[in-house]
Image (tube, rainbow, N blue to C red; front, top):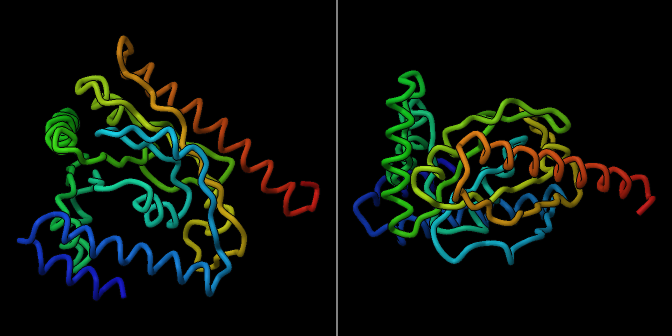
Length: 230
């Protein structure tokens, strides 16, 4: 199914963005339906009322494949910042290109940051939502890696707020694993973080503090639920 839909998305690159996004959202809904039907994997979302009406930057914890699929259901239309090498993958990479993903050569340092700021501003000025995983890679539950400054620099220079997201998807669909444990993934959307008067370092510190604390909270409660305490 992924191969088929990625092929369709790449073949209709010339159509309006709304049509291309319909293909993406069909795949999202199909995937989440199959996860619920065959794996018993559900989800619940808190904080939908915190979502701004206009463009913003989503920064999410990254611990599973699940959030790369599901988060797109809550926000539309999204634009992803990805490693340039991903766009070279047949079909999947072509689909990213067709969806106007921001393809970055991370080895170029400041040049990549400037590209990220410029293209992010262009997309958000048109109403799109920038999607970033500040840790840059999937990290097992209970662990963390340094939060990269890129998204915070975008927020600082463009004035667009950051919407932090915490979840415990990695407890049910671990990274590098085909196993998906049944249960209910908890997703929490925080209040927007206004960059006004803050440095990029202050912005990313606020994002990191909130995400890690919230991940710890929902992880503790989900473990208690499994034990029958809650």
